[in-house]
Length: 303
Image 1 (tube, rainbow, N blue to C red):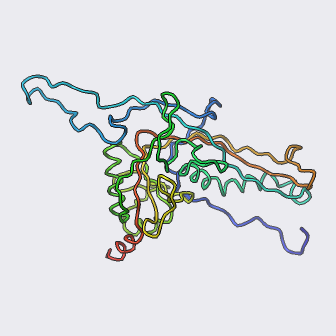
Image 2: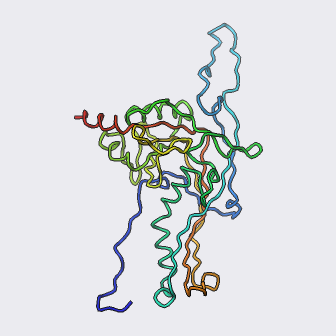
Image 3: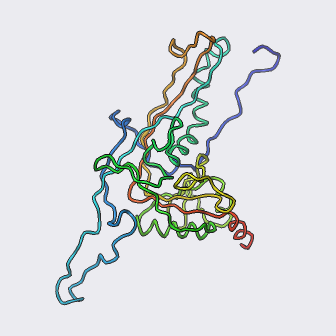
C-alpha cells in the first residue's frame, strides 16, 4: 500500500474483561492427552444434582437409640469434549507475508473469548449442534459409559421473572444443589440493569453476586433457552447457573507462511491462528427465563 500517509500501529484493543474466562479455573496442561477431553471424579448430592438430602443430621436423643444413616451424596464421573477456536485472514503475499503471523494472532485475540462463550452456551461447533460437551443450553443428558458428558438443564421456574427475582430464584436453586461458590452465566445485555439494581459486586477483575457466586458476563452468550429457542418479546433472555468451571487450553498455534497455507490458484496466503479448549463443570446445571419487560419496570421503580 503506497501513499503519503504515515503507517502506524492500530488502536489498542482490550477484550471483554468479565466473561467466562474471568471466572474459570484455567489450567496449564502438561499431558497433551487432555485434547481428547478430560474426565474427573466428583461428589454431588443425591437426587440427580437438584437438592441436598434434608434429613442429614442424626441424634440419639430423638428416639433414644442412634439414628440410622442413608447415603446423601453420589460419586459421579464427569467428562468433556474438546473444541478449537480459530481466526483466518486471507491476503496476497506482497503486503502480507512479513506480518501474517502477527495479524492472525491479533485477530484470534479479538474473537477468541466470544467464540469460546458461544460454543459453551450452545454446544455448537463447525455448525454441528450438540457436539461441545458440556454446554449450558441443553434439554437432555449425554453419557459415555459411566461418564456424564452433559446434564439436562433444570428450569427453575416456568415463567419469566424480572432480573431481581430471577437471580434470587436461580441462586436459591444453586444453593440447594451445590452449597458452594458457583457461576451465574449472564448475557452482557443484562449487565447494565443488574449493575443499576446493585446485583453485581466488583471483585478485582471479575464480578460476584451478594451471595458470593461468580458472574460470567458473556459477550458470546446468546441468551437462548435450554431447547435453543431465541429470546422472545416477553422472555428476553435466559440465565444459567453451574458449579465451578474448569478450563484446559492450549497455547495459540499459528499456521501462515508455509506451503500448506499458500493457495496458488488465487496467489493468497491463509494466516490462521487457533487454540484448543475443553471446559467442564459438575453437579448443577440450572436455567431461568428473564423478562426484560419487567426488568424495565423494576429499574424504573428503584430510587
